[in-house]
Amino acid sequence: MHLILTFGGLLAFALLINVPFGYLRQNYEKFTFGWYFYVHISIPIIIYLRIKSGLSWKFIPFTLGSAIVGQIIGGRIRRRKTID
Figure 1 (spheres, rainbow, N blue to C red):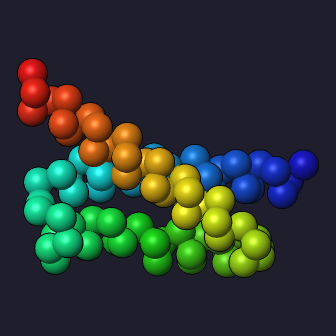
Figure 2 (figure 1 turned 180 degrees about the horizontal axis):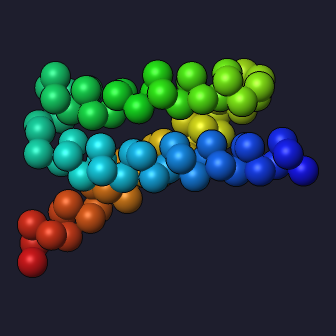
């Protein structure tokens, strides 16, 4: 049960921390320094938390997927705001 809560918490954190970064990423042209910065800034934090919580490398695809979903959500929020 502890493993499930830890894993779920890490996934939620990866998603939620990437929403604002995805929002900010929309201000930059694709593949510029700012764009890369906001795409990758959360990765060291997520890696640190995964290691500290004792989760193995097998969980990396799930945390990466959760981070990508957060980036997409943040980008969509930004695009909706600029349209209105």
